[in-house]
Length: 350
Image 1 (cartoon, rainbow, N blue to C red):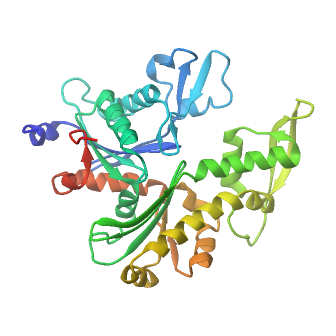
Image 2: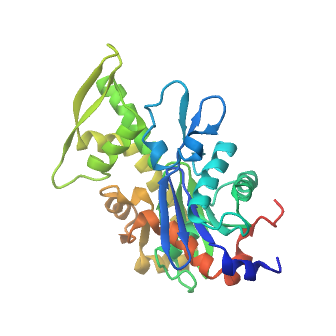
């Protein structure tokens, strides 16, 4: 649009990491201004957001697994893509309104990160949701590129940089050189699958049903991918599958590590497959440059150790890995005129 540069002076343009578990919003010159769970509470059967549209994010996450029959707490993103179009639109609309204070006349331009392995239909769903939620222009950027830029890797130089972004719904593995992705793998195994593996272990071993928030808490507090110097235990509460009554038990970090073997193994396999596809010169660069970890899954204890053992390369966890993708979208936003031709937008045909 011819007036875009002028309108951009008055709108609060934003970069959005639209994640399965959390949505982060960056604003140019302000950094991350919003970090909330990707959860929406609706009146059951109507898809109408509760509390005048404010039951989104932190408020809604507190309701997960605890709602009465008339309310549903929904996570509208599944495996990094939109699973419920209407709810995603309501969630995006709430976040955009919360950040963009000039609500009436000028709509913001928005840069949104998406998994590299999604289909054209899934991309169109993201574009349409953002437009209907109140964006003037929408640009899509691949998550591994955004994560690499947010981790301050030398992506524009003629050298291989490898990023492993372990999110809530997807794991993105990419080797980047000269401002583009050379090799990329995307699998729908990530943090949510770790939570499910822990919940399945509790059912199988202890006949104890636990909710997703409890499983996530176990993963964060005592979860690990490799043996720890000092193993830990945690008290877990849930519902007995036989008696149907509330019960508590103790679980050790060794058990959690065993439960996480399958999803962690799938991530390691994805990394090794990506390395096997790399050009010899890029592979040679990685001997010096190593692997960089981003995303919430990078915080799992020992994840860097198991990847280093499996690949023989140095593995470094990025500074503040949870916000790497969001910070990357902010860099795209700040250099929109330079980068916009490399991004897909709402003007493209799919």
